[in-house]
Length: 101
Image (cartoon, rainbow, N blue to C red; front, side, top):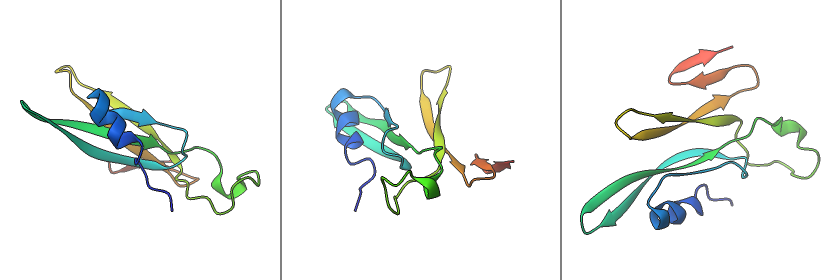
C-alpha cells in the first residue's frame, strides 16, 4: 500500500519548512511538528492530487489510489500560511465547505 506524505514529513522536519509535492497523484494535507530546544514549529506536508481522469489512466496504472483535486496555498500578512486541498468529483469542486459547479 502507498503511504501518503511518507517522504514529505522527514523533508519538512529536515528543512524546517512546509513542503508540497504534486507528482504522486494522491491528495492529503498533514500537520508536521518539528521540535527544537526553543519549542515546537508547526509545519504542513501536502500532496496536491491530480486533475487527470482517474478512470482513464492510460493503461499504465490499474485501479490507482489517486485522488482528484489540487492544492491551494494561503499566505497571510503575518508571515504564516496554510495549505488546503480542493477536491474534484468530476463535476464540481469542494473547497472550504462550499461546492462550485
